[in-house]
Each structure stands twice: as structure tokens, then as C-alpha cells.
Length: 312
Ligand code: OAD
Image 1 (spheres, rainbow, N blue to C red):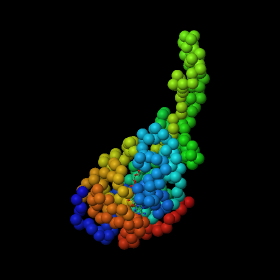
Image 2: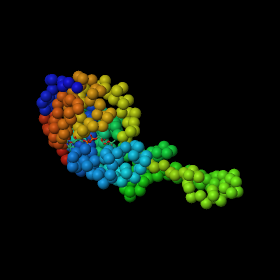
Image 3: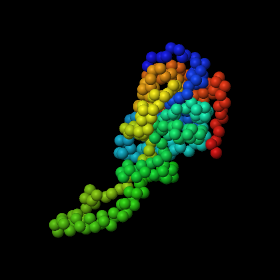
Image 4: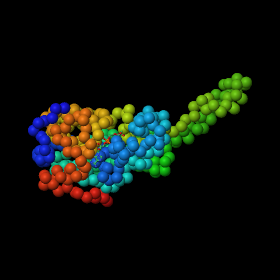
């Protein structure tokens, strides 16, 4: 994406902020690291650098839907560490709320699943959780949906949560199943009956097991929530007059493609510790995002909450 030549300096960024009416803010894990929540790809501190003990060929497999289907225990071994328990918010979350208060926030597309935007007071209707969230969980077998916190205790205790509805159905089916066994064995020839009854091979019967409850965070190999594409392409693309990308390495598609999908004349600002080379922004502000947004607000004459204020 060729740079728009008229934008270069911090003051250009401030002017853009002051004039914009419909800002898309695209965020990643970097906006929560100041709260002690690790990002994913930072070299020594990111979550992926701490997963060597899982023995995966690529630590991202911990969020791979096929790996989950094969062995959900891998995901649940780390799930307790990424549960949204934090009640605070960072100055950068405060900055997004400030844009909302000023009527400038079109949408915050967040890849984060920590729900901290809500702690800062960003309204649900202004947020698209591109990678889902822990707010709900769904049974991988019968697709029964529950509120996410219904399985938080099991996750915290390191137990793989199973579907209560599947369990209930299985209990109800239990008697019928015994009936099936009797019925099937009576169909056997007398000589086969003993073999059948003695068999320890579970494949002789269909032993039902309850489905695992998977939190509705978007795994690699799964579709993003419909709202992501719908809102971006059919609503926000027309309206956006400024894009601010904060604290993301932009390594994961399709979110990484958002800057390229937006019209070329919409200015784009990048705020993060690490530069990205695969897409060009008009203004790059490299550094700690809390510091950068605080400085932008100071220059704009806006009053940003500087402290990490507990939500309650
Ligand atoms: P990454 O860990 O890939 O990128 C975070 C970026 O934020 C890096 O460029 C850091 O340098 C930067 N950063 C960290 N702390 C910062 C700070 N205080 N100030 C400024 N910059 C800071 O995280 P994401 O880009 O969010 O998906 O990762 C995208 C997706 O990959 C996640 O949603 C997750 C992951 O796999 C799924 O699990 C499906």
C-alpha cells in the first residue's frame, strides 16, 4: 500500500485524530501487556515462547481446531492462564473509550479475548471481537451453547469441561443402550453370544460420550464471527475516515488484511513496539502504546485517564 505523502509527523497524527469522525481502531494483544497479560509473539515474554513444554511443532497449534478435536487437553492445559479475569484497563483502552466519548469511534476491531475493552467502558455495539471470546462456549458434538463462565471453574481446576446436555441425554439413553445390547445379543447365534457378552472391545457397541465444551474463541481453521466481514465490508469501509492499528503484529489473517481492504485515501496510523514490514502505514509511531496515545492526547488537549483504574 503506497503511503499518503501528506502525513508524516506526530502532529499530523494529532490533526487527523482531531478531524476524524469515524475511526476504526484495530487492536491486538500489545494493548494489554502493560496490565501483565502476555502477548503472543514477543520473543521472550509472549505466550508462544512459554509453550515449549507442550511439545508442539508450532506453539500456535494450541489454538488449532484440528489439534483441539484430536486432543482438547492441550488447549485446556493453558486455558486457565488466558481466562478474562482482569478488572483493570490500560491507558490505551482508555484512549479507545475517549474516542467513543468524543463520538469518533466507528468500530474497535479487537483480536483480544480478554474483554478489557468493556472494563474501560467501550460499548459492546462499538466492538467486534474478531477472534471471538470466552463469553460463551459451545459443545463440539451437539452444539449446545452455554454462558462462558459456566465452565470457568472446570477450566481453572484443569478439568476438561463436558457438555451437560450430552451427559443428560446419555443418562436418559443409558437404559435404552442396555436394551440394545440385550436385543443385539439375542440376534446372535448361540455360539456367538458368549463371545459378544465377554467382549471388551467397545467398538462392539456405540458407547456415547459427552462432547467437550469449547470456548467460542476463534481457533486457527475456524471462521471468524460473521459480524467481522459484514460490518467491515458492508458498513465501515464506506464510512471510515481514519484507521489506527495498535499493538498487533498483524500476522494473522484475515484481520491482517483489514488495512489493505480499506480505501487508499483513508489515512492509517500504526502504534506498536515492533514495526511491520508487510503492509505500509502512513504514520508509524513505534513504542509503548500507552505512552504514544498519552502523548497524542496531550498534544490534542484531550484528558486521557492516565492510570490503570480498577473497573470496580
Ligand atoms: P502478537 O503477540 O502477535 O503481537 C503483539 C504486538 O504488540 C507485537 O508487535 C508487540 O511488539 C506489540 N506490543 C507488545 N506490548 C506492547 C506495548 N505495551 N505497546 C506497544 N506495542 C506492544 O499479538 P496479536 O497481533 O494480537 O489469535 O496476535 C494476533 C492473534 O494471534 C491473536 O488474536 C491470537 C494469536 O494467535 C488466536 O489465538 C486465534
